Image (tube, rainbow, N blue to C red; front, side, top):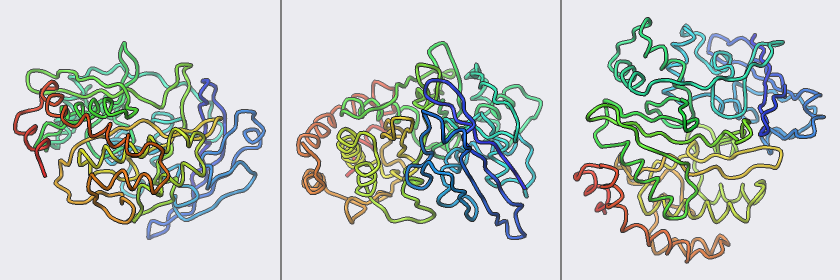
Length: 392
């Protein structure tokens, strides 16, 4: 049995013991039971808020479920992506039988993104120290790791094990600190067929010009031919606190192969969000942008909510890329279909009650001719510009 204290860092920087999480020992099939309850002290705290406003309301209930399915999916959100989980397994030297979420949460401790930390019962919470890792060294370790060379005595490799923890896809990335703040560093992969770093930087800038709320980002050179994209973390507050993060996969309790659409996200925002008047049109604008740049990797783990004492609001847009995998359909449906024609977007917005839907579509469409020039300014190769700006 694994028992963990769940700590929460509030936006003002204070840390509170908010709950207790318990896992049974897995059976021969790898199945286990999970249970969670808020502490009485947290329920009485003046700044307490639910870790999931739908599945885990602030009450003295003990929630129990199989694995980390609903209503406890929020704790799965705290774990890193596939890339980060592999590094976490190596960092903690977890044997095959101990590579499931309960052991990963225990190994993660307080080193992940978001406001949650998982510590052995009775352990005093300690502040997370910023990571001053050298980008060149981390990139070299990424290359060695992807090629199957794992040198436990190499300083760069050890730094990668401790820095490579974040939500999102399965690409090489790391959390780090520099004189300008805290960043999520995204590295090129040896498997890349296109300039992923330049394409993402350019698409983030295009999104900013299209009116999306996007995090600050910058490109850093890694030697002569390689570069990294640094994206400013949006889970941190100016007061030294944290914003609690919840994916829309958790918000909608969607597991495995799901069939949901942008309307489901919109409905959640209107019913449970703290600022639906701003977030509903912002989500619609994000959808329009994804449709126009053909960002077909629009799965639920690429849409997040930020929570706190004032409620839940839509997180900034991130992981914005054109259709690099040549997918013909979006993951999220537009109404009932995984594809949509540009001329149908405004009508869909009106159907959903989005104010100024036609103006939003026109504003996003108005910046699309800038895409090629922005790509060029970020050093994207000509063949990639031609492919992603001129594809049908």
